[in-house]
Length: 149
Image (cartoon, rainbow, N blue to C red; front, side, top):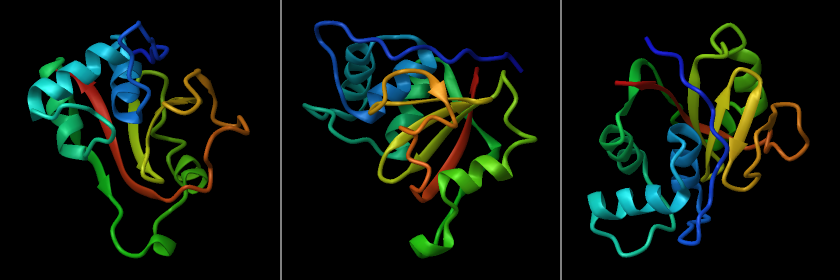
């Protein structure tokens, strides 16, 4: 399995400020405009203002990445029964190695975690998981490990 790198979210004049293209930008290193164009081409939508798990999976596949099924976790049920990002970070300490990249769906938003680094479309910087801008109380809906094909 090839180790991945967490890239900074890059913007060009044709940028997209929403979290789906920002997450793809952090994973692939492409600009948010290129990532949004990929999603638009695959889905046929005119604008990308929100993305689903299937749309991100399809876009990642198009860009040469995929989810690992062995770490695909969906947390169902009521929000109060799902772990928060802080609880998931505590549970996943043995799994979070520097070469492993996790895509987290929490708080109707996509976040990227690699080791002790965190980024998302709101923060737009690579920060520590202890940074006060990290939405630690958001409830986790799903966690996906991303690998290069």
